[in-house]
Length: 475
Image 1 (cartoon, rainbow, N blue to C red):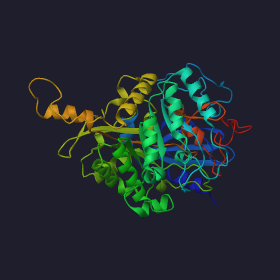
Image 2 (cartoon, rainbow, N blue to C red):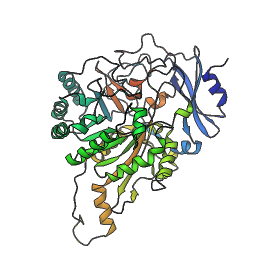
Image 3 (cartoon, helix red, strand yellow):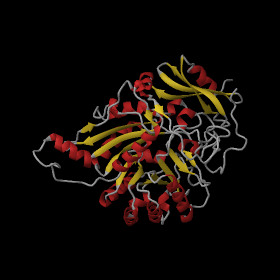
Image 4 (cartoon, helix red, strand yellow):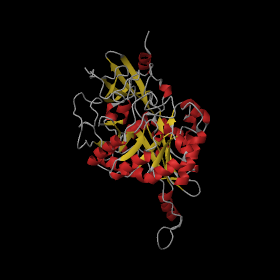
């Protein structure tokens, strides 16, 4: 009897190999050869482990958009790598000298505690009994990072970081080392019930609340988070608006759970603009324990997300305004930038050029710098200016309004498709710019840090070091 992986492989036998790459085996996390292949108009990642057989996972639904999406990039390697290249990617993260992108955002997981027990969780919160980082450990990381650069955007995460009462002090420590942008990754439950805590965070220097927000219906939260949470989410948005703290809504997209709610999420965000700065979609990735390979039907890819955005907003937001990233690998994310006009219309200020494959390569380091600057400027709450026009002399009418609204009512829709053991592409991983600060002093790319085999065993999270004896099984 054939395994599920073998059945999937036969069903999507490749008709065209687009690119040879490497991946890992979901059973043992050994590095193995892989290929992006085209079949029936969609792109799959195919790979074979000598010990555990064949695996095939959809990574992009829509071949035409795939070919027009990939853009060239000139790598930029770490100036001061902290780990040696010994076993190769993904086993030498730290960053090693072969990583092809500088750090844009550093994620500090200051606790593994959480006040929710969600079925969907990067950090496996609640199942990790490690102690919270002490203030001394956090300060040591800020000191270490500042020796390299103070331009990194800092994401304070967990677990649920708001279970810590000293979060304002953590921000103040970061500020003292020269860091300027602080993003709080949170489920929002404490911010909903404790506005005084939010006041402290803002006074300390908080820039943005990156709010877990999976939909506009309570049944969505009951499925993904275990209980109805919509009221708490809306209270968090209200409190942030009262305090002048920018909010980004962050939905985890799961087929047949909330992918029909994409348009409603965007409309709710626009109703709370300009304090809600935008929406950042995250198609589900399968970290943790999954004894059976996740079915292709359980995934939503980037082009599908873009098509749903256009369809569910009745064409207000078109797919052709979205662009591939300039920082991380083009296959990892998308973004579209807009201005919300007084009549409720959105004016796009991005446009995807179909000939991106032939354009001048982006320098990776420059892309990271631009991304850091964009996030710091556009994800924080705007300083509202109500008097128009903003320039002396004769008013230019609608152009004046557009320029002013661009300063005060910018809005974005973006998304990032994280990778798991089934769809991990090492060409993408080497371009990662979101790095998690490991407790042992390393910076580890996000998808490598959270990577697990099908039984939940990790390379980095809760591991202390790389998997013992892990080697490539390439021929």
